[in-house]
Length: 345
Image (cartoon, rainbow, N blue to C red; front, side, top):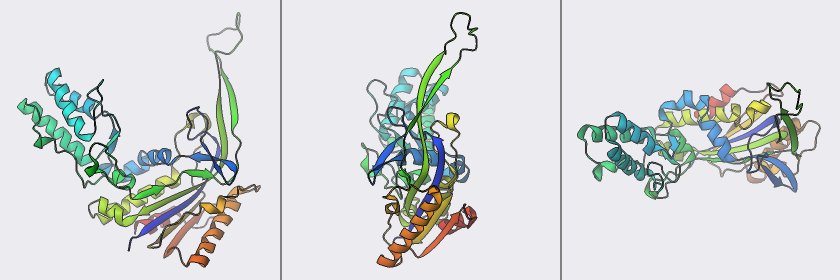
């Protein structure tokens, strides 16, 4: 049966604007009739997969998301001595393998394409061959996409190529939007900047004025990993799958989105993490926070509510996991090291 790994995290952030909407204000969601702060799954996944933790553990097996593949290939061909008109034509042909190129700029792909390390190597090897032979790519040589490829971020978070659906990869990790367990009220930070060369002899006013939205709260985060699908996506490499799960878990516990970090220094480690393993149908514990926490100590109350919800699910449905491991910073219980060993096993 399919093996699932589920992660439940509670992370407290001070005043912050980690993930902004189109107006520059913190993203929100209405949950249980109250407004909560929200961090989108897209923002979280990008922060994790581009983090130093992910890079140091899995850099050799990380893919690249870009529209600019053709630009890199073009420059590579130019550096190899290929004439500009041929370099542009050949680079556009190669970029077109990974998605439809833009009419106004044939070196750029219309949508972001997630390219595995092996595919990138094949691209550059082909570019070297074209430069050496000074000939345009043959049709067979443009078979650069791989249905099975060892890129952990593609295996975890999936790949969608509208123009080449046969090479799509189903994501092995499902990531929920993080929401605060407590209600929030977004405040505005009015700020001014002073011109250092202004002597105030004529104008004592500010050189710039603006405002930035912010709020704080305890976020609940849920992640579900289909381990069997992850192994399949990684061509059966069990060891690499374990490393990927451990790297994702560590990043989720330690890495915050980068939004407005210079203004708020809102970095935080997870205060509570519950990891579960088993073949049972996965379920989030977000229902524990349908009613907003209004306690003076929302973190302690959130931990209590989450553990009560987990216990009650087990009582009603039977054991919802075969094994569990947790850490609790408030009580000094457990360790991240033990949890990483637990999820990677």
